[in-house]
Image (cartoon, rainbow, N blue to C red):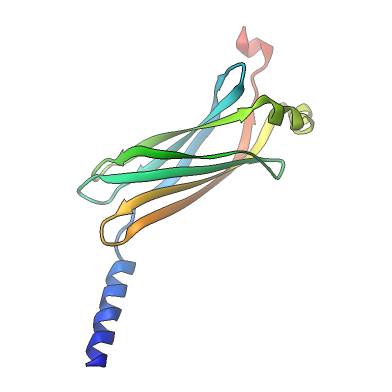
Length: 151
């Protein structure tokens, strides 16, 4: 009897491990908006859904770092669903207060850009499996606008 239970358990574990899962990638991070309170960056995340039904996204968590320090973090609760059998583009807004940007003046002054690392966690609700988090990480640099870009 115990051998039968062990075989059944191994079968289920093998099937769950080989279930296709959604895949995601960060395609772009850019300056989105400048206000009196903060600078808003936008990350574009492409998520492919291999299933024939839509999948709800529970939350998106993010951590935005520059010069080895965290400058913005947060979560976006219930951002929608992934389209069935298709690729969904998600916009993840990252708001950075000005007082943090002032502390990055050394990095900005050298080459007029911000070297960044963006860590994202896309938590989705998969049937049978439950909540599943897709970890993403992207490094790059964001060129800051100059006066000639603004005027």
